[in-house]
Length: 579
Image (cartoon, rainbow, N blue to C red; front, side, top):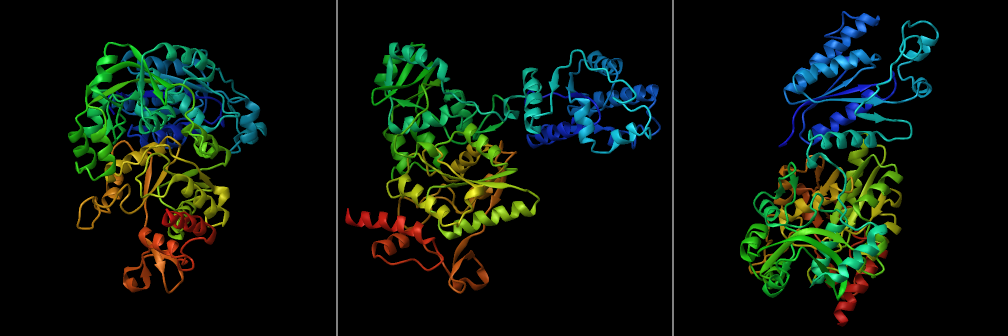
């Protein structure tokens, strides 16, 4: 990405300290983000370039000199060279540093500080045992000294640390030195005021001019505050808005996918009242919710915004109607959210933010997280897809794949099933054992729904990356809806969402898993993957038909949906009939 340049990262430490493990994990991390990196260690250097060298002090010195020269060439070509060598002597490591310094190439010494007794306990290659028995002579830490670095750029203590924590420590140093830009950072940017500063921030908010926002704006404020739209620091200013509209990405800190605008509309009257203010407070129902600093006002070009985001300006589209009815100006600026946004609807405990979800996945020991975005009730066909995805990951060698079942909890159109009903239905599915409770995390995604098809599906995937999800399941016509005008048809082409997601920039570290279509197999009496060779055996049960069945008190075919989950839905549809 822009602003990247090559460098050498030199890992030093005792044999078995974890140098190569961390270096290879860092290599994988960088390459997944489009940053060229290559690991050099004893295994690939001593078998080729340095196979004429032994382990006497003068040979060790020459070994390190050659490696430093190779690292320098890699760095000069724009690659991150990751050199993992015991390199026990200060003077040899200093020579490596000077070789880089002489030609203006960055060099970072990483001391992997693992105690000798821990390295001996690990003894992956059985070398310590041989050294203690006298079979290997001149082994560092046993009968040859290791000189600890006096001033390394990074010290890593592997005991009690996870590999990814060690990697992040190095990533942050590289960002501080301008080697990597923001897009290489996986940390979540929360915009909520820390608890210890909250009273002071609230006092300030009371004294500032106010702008009253609506429920939709508050939902977007929650999305920003919890870090779902990292690296945004608030509602978009015009530059960010234009990048998002024209490129579906933010470009100032590398390429970060951001396909939908997160903007704050306001009226001309409010814009004129607040112009010239350095900061003002956003209120909802008169209550202070956030401070917006360094505001920038710009024209809300609604028709152009809708044409670019939705591919239509049809006012029969419910989200487009809300945009057309909103203010004629947009205001961008840095946001400080005054404490966690809560809705008091009995579901706040499911609204876990990205950092809380990461902690949850760690607690479960997940080595893969696959996310499923949904805004509809779950039938056994969905469950089949999720179970099949888990099977695919297990077949690929993952030990503990965990499903993030992540229903969208913000605004949805009037004929969608409300969130509280969907959550009861999802819980019933889990209680019935259709999805395995021990490897499923049910949480609410606070974003509003826009029904913007392939443009919006990128947002659904990008925001899940912030939870640590590395797989994303995409189905037929994601984020789609029927065309507002007759004849009856979809607004978006059903396969485009999946295709676009597979090509979208800035989603490198997320693998997209397209799912096969599932339908009710009348022969098997269960949901199954659709087989076009015997299409007459399959029954596609639509939402409209589910509503009709429920209202008439009929049951769907056996095996279509768990009975407990069906009764939740059936009660809801019946109540609609009464109203």
